[in-house]
Image (cartoon, rainbow over all chains, first blue to last red; front, side, top):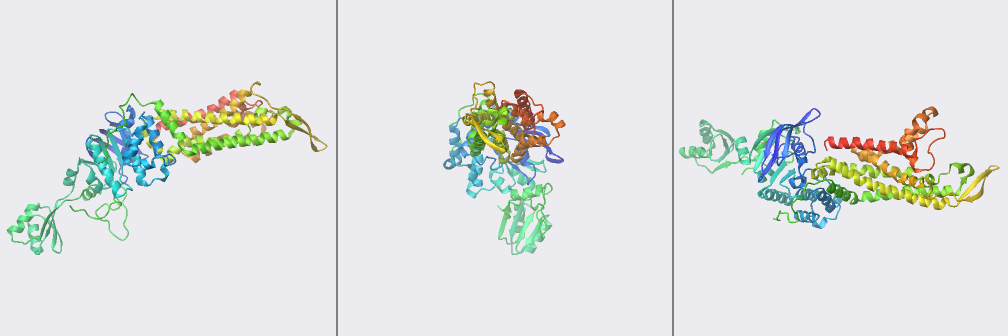
Length: 323
Length: 289
């Protein structure tokens, strides 16, 4: 369990984290979402005591992290990929960490096996790919069999297999009753992994809720209708208080529930070829929510900004998720 | 799905502390090649240049120089260059953690910074001392083997003429000799510790090495340009001149310029390194990593 109280961090005249209060519960994966520069990494550094807060407090399992008897048994963290001395072998990297917490050397072999790096244990980490570096970082995080795990953008640079592996790992860790706190600016990633969400923008907490609640509260349900009688359908829906965007025979209807749209068609004898509820994706909900809080707006040459937050999610594949 | 249950992890016994941190720092320093390379380079430079200098001295020592002949200092001449190499290890031991990002991993596994800094400092001190003493004793014995038959020459009618072969060597059982040879090792080690402290302040390898060379070497060279009435007041405080009084039998420095005693000067030198380390430790403790 991680608890923050009015956590604030100021770098010079820039407020990176602004009065953040939250708690991260055990037994579930908590996603920490925000656009680039929102303060996610800073918050994680404050939790670990790497940076000292300007104001406020944060505790891990009820104590400041630095006061933990055996810090590696409390928290395992993957902060940046390759926070590693490249001249040291994977084995010695993990060994020197294990020794600080009096963990037995055989535990090193165990975590190397777990992340699939046994074959390269004696190789210097300088030659590791980004994916292998991430695995080594995760091995370090797991060394102390910690109650709390923190991952900062863990899927960055990983191939699909690696992404799936991390997803399953995080879920498995949470199912064992651990606290799993994972940051990402990839909304689609969180949609698949997280149970609970903390959303921040410009250092401030914007939302603290479950994934389902988040989507529900922050996006409109839409209904897609395909009909040969699009004009009449549009009039009927508009008269009933709905809003319609038409693309030929396909209508997107908002502000009316699916059932009401179906009834309207039935009562007026309109032939429907499709009636689908559109689930807004986390991606859309997130963009909607953080468009005011995006720190770096990128101009797109020759085109107008779309979705209110261009640039903030430049790593996100641009397809619209409709499920 | 692999099981995540930790098989190889017995329950914790007590609180993680200094002894674990010491073992960790020892693993760190011995598991990177740069340690071996830089230690080897220190030994080669110190012992190599000492040997060349001793060989040269044993070939042509002038009768004029006999009175000032210092069998210990002359055999340890390579220290002047060895200190420039050992500061590289002193800096890198700490600064490489910053350049690689390892420091954040280190402080996440052991967030008690005093423990981390203290353990690293202690392990490095031992490594630097062993290296320094190895270099000074080896250089000393090689030097004495040359000095045992030193050709003495004199200038007669403008020409250099060998007039005698004499034994100018000394041994460890003579007064102050053991102290001076140990002092050579201490001087090298403290030079490295000065660099360690500067690395903690600057957190940058090249910056710390440059600063250490500046303190050790540049201040000494600049001291040479001082007018005499300034030199008599300032020279003895110059780190190289203060610290180097210990690794010879005779005073180092120009005639007529006062210097500290062997231990007095070395004490001041330790003070300089200690100040850098204390400031570095304070900053290590206080600054965001």
